[in-house]
Image 1 (spheres, rainbow, N blue to C red):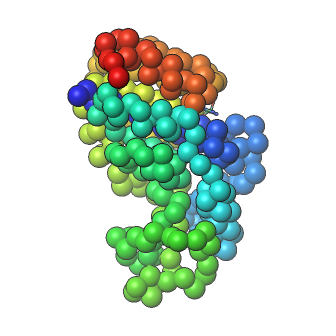
Image 2 (cartoon, protein in one colour; image 1 turned 120 degrees about the vertical axis):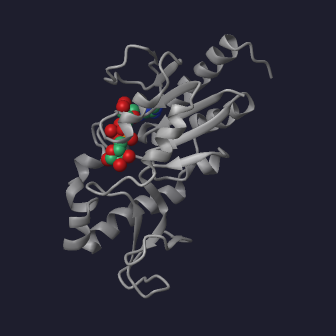
Length: 232
Ligand code: APR
């Protein structure tokens, strides 16, 4: 089976009712990113940071995977699908995708502030001051904040390096190193980008599908079935 690598961003979850970051009314219009998603923010005002992630976690518990997430699961019938997501939601998991790498962390997990290897699944949505790890230190969101290293970026680059087909869905490609993963795609492989808006990529070898994820992924499935003579 060919390796189909999918790089997803916030737009992947937009049709599930999860806000994107940089569109009109997006999260970064509502909050100052450096006040809620950076180590300095955590240092200066951990309650505000916790509230920001608690509110997003609460919304996530009420959200469901959309047709786009389900379409990526359908592609697993025909390809070895590896998802590399910038999203911290668990909608790819809940849709049934099997191979998922979270570049920027996971909203439903928390981790120790004294030992980053101590990571815990959260049952509910609320993390509070005083919630501690087994070593007694305060728990923090298991999120990669601005200014922090992206521990899984080299794993993601290796995955992209082995792609036979690359798909980019719902990301403005504004944030590095995630946006740089496109450069790891082997020269000449087909690259498809699904987004209802224009996205600057600097890569001339991209087929744009100017649709929302739910519609665009179905169009992509039809394109790939035709191109690779796939049948059910
Ligand atoms: N289907 C597909 N794409 C969509 C949809 C949709 N229904 N709705 C919006 N989009 C597109 C937008 O056009 C935009 O290109 O999703 C993209 C969202 O871009 P951003 O809000 O910048 O989100 P993203 O690219 O994922 O941000 C990357 O920035 O703030 C950090 O860590 C955060 O992971 C995030 C990173």
